[in-house]
Image 1: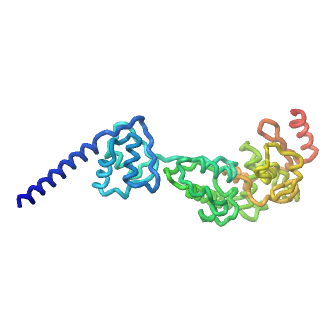
Image 2: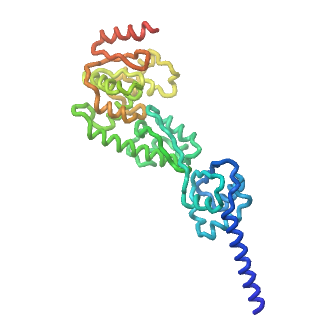
Length: 331
């Protein structure tokens, strides 16, 4: 009986001492060198590996006290991956609450209007906060993974800034961008002007991508769209350089030559009539609206003025004079 009493007393004392130690540890400020200090917890990390990471980054002196603190709370399986910011004065208990509640600092990635899907993939691959699942997938496999019904990715993703917690996969981000484009395009399609020659929203998306690449002037987008629609109505070829460049792929060296305009590809609108088979970039909302609400003009031609804007002409003779005025004289 005495032995049992002593063992019980020792266990009680050990429990009291452990509780006291954990209380002191939980309320002691962490050793934060810089304020704020970033902490990135990866998906699949165990509580032990996280505690070791905190030690290696100088936040904790040893791992076991933190492991015990989390286990006593019954939250060992509730630690969430993500980016966190630690500030001076934060205690071990504050840290415990932060990483089990998922109070993360969000990261962001911005996709620019006019980028191609190849550029999107490069941006995702270069982002260290993204969990990379698509690096070794083909474009077609990516579309299948995100539930897209299309077979070509170009133009299907809405350019914008997307915010996420560390460890979110590139496929999750692409799925959000795809669904965003679907919603915005469907809404714009329902509100489109009457009498346009498109038979599907996808055709409007193709036109929007051409408009996106032809001008950076917001006020000109509806005019550019109408010029190409006027050409389609008359059976003229679109003859737009960005489609030729897109069709050249990696062989384009920054200079578009006459032989390039004469070399036939599915995207060469100098050799083929009608719209190209797919979009040539990711159009923004302004270009989609321009394609579905084009300006009223008889213009069939336009030429760059050299300042980013264009001169529009209804006849070939007017266009030739504009070319001489804005292009040949300047050269």
